[in-house]
Image (tube, rainbow, N blue to C red; front, side, top):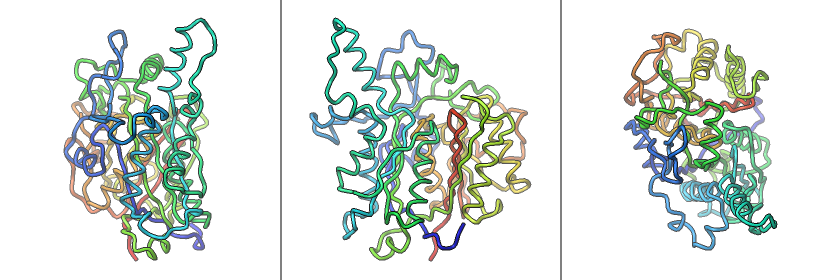
Length: 419
């Protein structure tokens, strides 16, 4: 890392997840090994191969928005606004005299307004072919509308855009925010991601490519990363938000600094549309890149929140890459996949798992990998996957991996804050 770069810290967090609709409830679910999966309630699943997902529990848009306002927002934008509001309030950013021209929003989503698209096409196809579309159709659909709504709500006029890299989208947003602040382009950026595709098209589409678990007899144990009998990921929905801030700016306004963002890395597999590189080459490169960017060595990392989707090939290639990067130190690491509890939130996964990593480091507790029943001989038994129960451990620094269809890889490192 070049020394002239500015330091970047986290001053606020927000989450809306299948385990809880606030940061405290999310963390409580994580450390207690709660499974977020259940049978889908948002549509009739009778004829679908997969009948379950990790849906939000008790989320009613009208608890957060006026009914008229809620109707103008796709669900993914609703989730973005709710998580961002928790993070902004947590940061105290609006309690101080900040220059709103230098506060930005960078937001990730892999798919965006899928619910809106499905509803509008159903309405169109039920008519006589005359193109009658809701005037809010396009503004509700487009990915960049979520950061647009967040900026309009608070009057933040700094850098504002969306990142799209499939399941790595919100980690890309975090890394972009890190670099914009490092280079002095902004004082603070609200970043993160949201996804809401527990829909007919979402479940049906991922079923068609054989990506989802079909363990309908026991949904709560269907997401089982590193287990011999894993059969695909469990689709999730939700949102995660982080307030990232230049260190001196945060100090001047007396902000509560949660953790420091040490660095991030990006890479491509350049291999296949959906399958990971069999030797984990992209994963290897991205973790090395993140360590170099942070000015750290493998021995500085104590915990890795892995991508760990519960797919047969993905889990193997990621662990191979970890062992190659970390060598003997891999046996000192705690590794866990919080997707075993939250499911896979696609474009929001990176933000949610970054928050899990931050909370692990600030609380010195490693959330577990649940749903492990049968050891897979593909994995070195000396590795600590934090199976079954949370473990107490001093976490000086945590690394979070997210990988997306198209071969997109992103890793970000958080380290304990010190003056």
